[in-house]
Structures are given as C-alpha cells and as structure tokens.
Length: 316
Figure 1 (cartoon, rainbow, N blue to C red):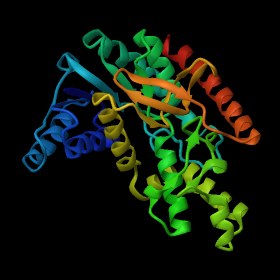
Figure 2 (spheres, rainbow, N blue to C red):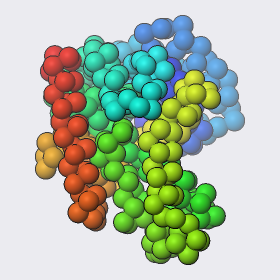
Figure 3 (cartoon, rainbow, N blue to C red):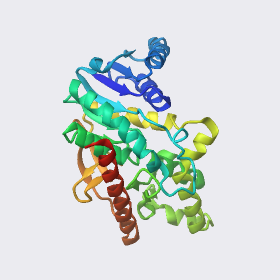
C-alpha cells in the first residue's frame, strides 16, 4: 500500500523514517514538501538505508504522485518554535499556531482530496484537533482523524513508570480531550497490573498531590522542554504517526486515544477510539470522576472555540 506524507520538516521526516523502519506497514512512501529540494534530499537520504529494512520504496513527489495512496499524513505548517508557541505561561499553547496553519491546510487539503478522494487523512500539524475539524470540512468526508493525545498518554505512562520503577508498557494511563494545555489526565483510572497508581504512590511514601503536579507539568510542557534542547519535537510524534498509519492499513481496530469528530461534544477531541480501515470507527468515553468529566467538558469548549476560528480562517 502507498502512504503519502505532506511536509518534509522535522516531524514529516521522522514519520517517514519510522514508517521505513517499522517494517511491513506499507510498500511505498511519497514525500511532498513545498520546498522540493528538501523533500528530494530527505527521500534520497532514507532511500539509501532501505536495503537494511523490509522492502519499501520512498521517494519525493508532487501531489499527483499521491494517486492511490490509502493514507495521507499531513505534517506541514509552522512549528512551535517558529510560531512562538514555547511560552509555558501562555494559556493558548499550541493554539497560537492555529491561524497560520489553518491557512496552510486550506491550501493543502483540497489538493490532496483532488488526487486521492478515497484516502484516510491523518492530521499531525499543531494544533491537530481544530485542524482535523477544518480538514473534515474541506475534504467533505469523515475519514479524518488527528494524532490526538496518544503522545500525551505515552508521556503519562513514561512519567509514572519512572516514579514507580516499572516498565512504561506495564502502566495503563490515558489523557483525553485536547492535545494541548486543556488536556485531561485520567488519574482515577491509571493502573499498573490492575493496581491504582495513586495507591502505589502512597505506598512509596510519595505525596500524591506533589507527584501529580510534577507529572502534569512535565506532560503539558514536554514539547517545550524538548524544543529547548533540540529545536523540534519530532521523534516521539513520528513514531506515533507511523503506528497509527499501521493500524489503519491493517484494519487493526486498535483502541487508542486519538481524536476524531465526536457528535456528542460537537468537535474533534480524543477519547478511547477504535482505529482501523477508514480511520476512527467508534469512540468510547472512558470512566472518569465527576471532576475529570468537568475538565473534559471545559477542554471540549476550548476546542469548539478553536474549531470555529479554524473554519473562519480556512474558509470552510
């Protein structure tokens, strides 16, 4: 199967490399960027490594080369560093990038849909949730989802594992709502081997509230900490994007916290989503305390405001 990646910047390149290394996910990858020499260079660099990987062809191209792609991953746009979204005290967070990236999507999405109207479209560019709503309107179909809070949930699991001295894969923990500052960490359902995390933290003589504050701060601003060190948050989200493409192409029906339009909330946000052929097939609301549910309602309101703004800027 063919996968298209629109945007050959840090995230697009990391996504393409993860697809190459994942093995068996797809047979062909087409990399597109408005900076054609960059796309050419990134594709050539990776192509020379393909003899070490399962069979996959990667090349640069133009929009017409997306023909017959099953999934198109959109990573193009202004990143957080260039867009001035690296201030921890700014309540907008990634939403500060919305106007500029909505204009980028207003240009890209119609071009993609004109060539591959049947493709599933995956939104990675920040802020992904309102941009997914805009993409859905521009594309005229529901085969659209964003990477949502999967990366945040993975960060939650890693942070808890570090404090509990266990493997991250043995921690079950979810983040729902916005991929952004209003996201909701579901502490009430976080477990290790069926044991509530809050109980384990208490047994470890830790102040649960203190640990909670540290963990939430580290997760909400993980992207900024990474950018301060490397200039771009790319490898984690690249691996996440490749994993989600795999779930769609294999029709896995994997249950993951990715974002799609949810009629109940009237906006794209992350819940426990069933991801397979065609994108998100079902969405389920995980168990929450009343306080967590109220926080989710507030996150949805933030996203509804952002979605309306994206539509106005993007002309949808």
